[in-house]
Structures are given as C-alpha cells and as structure tokens.
Length: 439
Image (cartoon, rainbow, N blue to C red; front, side, top):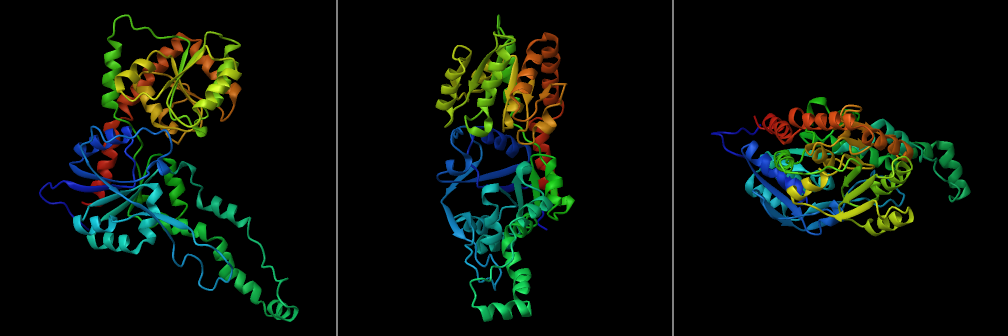
C-alpha cells in the first residue's frame, strides 16, 4: 500500500468532469482542506456528458486542469466465446493520453466520474498504468437511479427466450433437440449473452478500491452487486456553503429588504427531468385558493421556450418570471431571499442546499437522493407525492398560508446547513476516505 511521507500533499486526479461553477468551488475547498494537489481531467465537447444549460467556467480555480480528447472504443471479447448470434459489443468512453499522465506522475488517488467508469476495466493501457503506479481508484457516483442487482437481473430475465430452431434443416433440428444440444448451448452460452449487461455491472462495480456515494442508499445498491460494505463510503454533497452563507448574511443586513410572502422560487436547468411544467400547473391550481401566489424561475436550458408557452397557455404570464441563469452568489442570494419557499418539482440536488443556505423552506419530491438527508418532512419542508400536481399545490399553500410555519422551517433549514451538512462536513468525508486508502 502506498504511504504518505513528510506530510507530502496527496496527488488526486478527478477524471472525466466538466468545470461546472459549483464543482469548481467544491474542489477549491477540498484541495485546501485535505492538503492535496488536485488535477481535473476534463474533455472536449463536455456538454455531451454534463448536459445542455450547465454553466461552466475556468475562472477562479485553484487546481490544475488538463483537457483531453474523448475517444470511443468497443469492448473486446464482451460476449461468450462460442456465441454464434450476431451481437454487437457495447462501446465505452476513454480519455486519450490519460495513461501517460498516470504513468508519469503516479497519482495517489483517481476519482472517476460515472461517464468514464468502464475505461478503467476495459482499457488495458489505463488499467496497466494504474497498477504500475499503485494508484487507488474510486468510483464517485450518485447511484440513486441504479437498480439493485436482483431487480436488474429479474428485469433482464424477462427477455430470455428459448432458441428458435425452425430455420434449421429438419434432420439437423431433430438431432439438436434429441441430443439436447440446444438446451446446453442456451444455458452455457446464449443465457450468458443475454444477461451479459447484468454480469458486467457486477464486475465493474467490484473493480475499484472504493466507492464514494452522494447518498446513503448507495450502500444497499452496491452491496447487492457483491461490493463489500467497507468499500462503500457516503460522502453526501454540498456547494460552497461558506460563500453562500456569507451572501445570506449580507442580504440580511440590507435596510428595508422585503420578502414577498407569496413568492415561490425555483433554480435549475430548464430540462424535462426538473419538471418545471409540473410546478407551473401546481401554481395554477394553488392560485384558485390564493391568487397572489407568484413564481420566479432561475436558470436556462432547452425547455425554456416550451415553458414560457405553457405559462401563456395557463394564463400565468403576470405571475411567473423567468430570470435566466444567475451565477453571482450575491445576486442569487438577493433573488432567492425575496421568496418565501423553494420548490423543486423534479430531479436535482445542490439547489436544495443553496435554498437552505438562504433560509428557505423546501418542497420537493424524488430528487437525486439528497432529499433523504436534507429535507426533514414537517421540519424544514415537505416531500410531496411524485408527479402529483394537487399534492404539490396543497404543500405550497400549507407553507405560504402560515407565517409561523415559514419562520420555523426557515430556521430549521439554516440549522441543518450549519450543524449537519455543509462544505466542511462533506470535505471531512472525502478526507477520511483519502487517508483510509493511502495510510
């Protein structure tokens, strides 16, 4: 096992990441917190993986950045040796030249993104470089959408079908069935072919030295694939809460700053899985009871025009304001603190942390798993039934109709950030993981 000497900084590679502004802030903090030298290997055409509408920047970063070319390659020998069917091997992404950097610089740890996990298993040159450098490999994931092994196996097994022998000549078909060759072939070869994707995930998830999961449910998911419990580490997730809390205090000291008691705010990329359309429909429903309700939407994305059109169709144009992307922390604080509740109708995560830094009650449903530890139902917000417009409407009205409830939930949101989940607690989790691998 590689050991550190003379308090030498850890050399850590974060491989396969785009430079989203919130991720940059996190790595700046992590680098100083862990006495590390961090290098981020990013990729050209990064929008392909991170998605349209994510703000990326090279400004204000304290770590090193290297851009490599993404390359796609088919997995060799993926299916069983004696498979006679025409099955096309899947492809995987790898970063061209990464093996050279590993061989030359001998990083202590590689933090691998989900988009590039397969290259460590299937690219022989990268695998050899890691082994030679004695580098520890960590898969850093948000596995909340990953099915457990048993569920995935049952799902894929539905597609298992006996071999079709009708195309064989009658005599050949007779001897094949008589000797049971078809059954042997099916059980030993074809079944393995059809379930290869399931078995390959099990092999992949057991390959790294550790897993760094955002959410506690990662333990149950990865252990179902046979990963030992001690290899699974729960990191949680956080933006730079120091920066956000500082802006929160600045706005709190403004003279005559007014909060709109009927304002809802949402922050995030305008994409389908954020379900801003559901939020608009819930707003329309809630306005039947309280017509003064209004919504501010902060963010950009491919769904922006469709959402604006839906706003017109619902006759909400005077009640909904699309602000575009806001990335300056003080400007974001000013906008969010004018609202009285934060709503995330669909998928997401870090926007919950941000809203809590700005003392907002939270209403959300199934997000990315972070709601499991950030949103305490009835304490700092409410969890509504997934995709249920009326339940979301009821939860909005419940919060905004009670100043006392708003106040208590706002206080609890801030308390959770200060005491439980912030940039320091998350960096501590990473530090513990790093030093457990290179002690």
